[in-house]
Image 1 (spheres, chains in turn green, orange):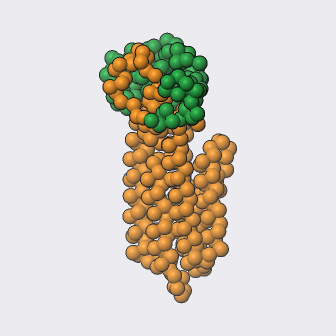
Image 2: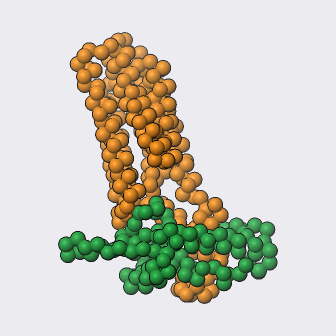
Image 3: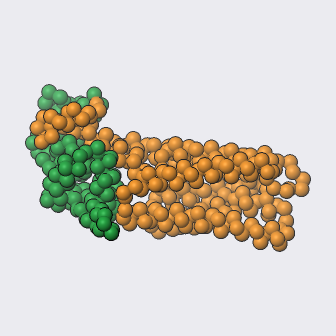
Length: 115
Length: 222
């Protein structure tokens, strides 16, 4: 297995952080756009672009609600998104468990993460 | 290995973002999210609750020890207990507000309903002391009731509700509290306070340890 086989939609630092953060919420719960932006310390423009890519892939669902003059956007990971993160984590584990930093079989892949 | 934003800029499109960096970032982001959302509160809060159990109930035990006839905890012991409980309420409210900011959905609603029901049930169980007082209940009953009965009632009801909702941690916590309260019933009016203090302290410390372990659990390797 090679790094090319990691899901390219998740294997980008910003999107990986978004997916990991939303996955920590209980299934069915949503997070407001402003809270997510605050947690990840991203600009609104950057966050919107990354969220759109994840939403187009079906990994994420967003909802806009209007309360008077203010509009609130909430986002949540879909079951497809959770499954994709699970598959990505398994692939990562296989990669790190199977190879050391030089591409040789490793005795324990955990050492690489710890280093 | 910890992930730094500098490496993020270079790897924004996934180029040069190697698997070990990805694993480190996944651990970092998951850990941060777990500590932020904290469904059961931080381990430190539970450690503080263990201290409350020990100090508040321990203080009551010290003030009633050797009383003949039993007349209940002294004013200083109750003052210490109320102050500690008030600090706990304030800290808990802050944790709930901080963890729940921007989060909505069924789990959040269920959490709020659970907290509300627990507060009402404990208040109702303690409010039942008023008729007991006016009916001139015997001193042993009067001594045992406030130390253990509310916790036994709320613990058993909570364990049943949490089990029905397949909420393992809450069910286990409530059952442990009910068991401690049942054991305290055998300690007599004074001993009940001591057993409750040690028992509640041990339960709260156990939860603190469990939450700390959950937060440290690897996102990649577990």
